[in-house]
Length: 179
Image (tube, rainbow, N blue to C red; front, side):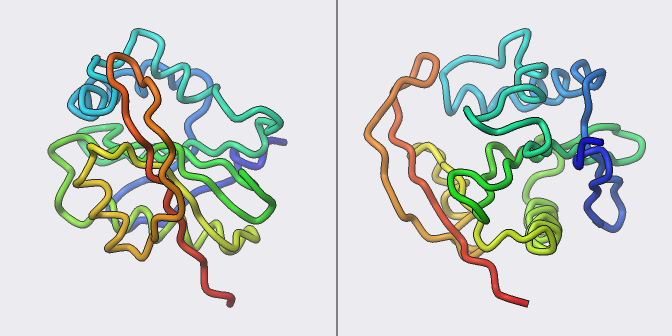
């Protein structure tokens, strides 16, 4: 059985569960609600298959058992956030956050911090020793957010095309405390 089907993150006041095939419509609606993020990063709104891509795409060499896409649900709003993470990428015991996104009305209230900390606790319990992520340079708000959580820049990749924009990506890392 896919390990992601058994995973959940404790987040009081919200239900956090793995998103699965069949949830593409929910994910697509969330991504469209978060068009401001996509326009900042790519200069374009999310495409019509962005939800399906988020659920399916993974780095070369990683299987479905290595990818976790968690959905954050609130009543009565439904799906208000998503968190995409890959285990053992790019190295064993490193976990990589591909995307953490909250719908605009749920930003700036501490939910992102709480969601990340729930992930960190869960990932550490699964053997993670560090968590990495990439932030496009122009997403200054995200850079500040991750730095406040203890992430440190470890690499700045040369500008590359993301949709209609060319952006440098700042790779950040946070080492997890041994238990």
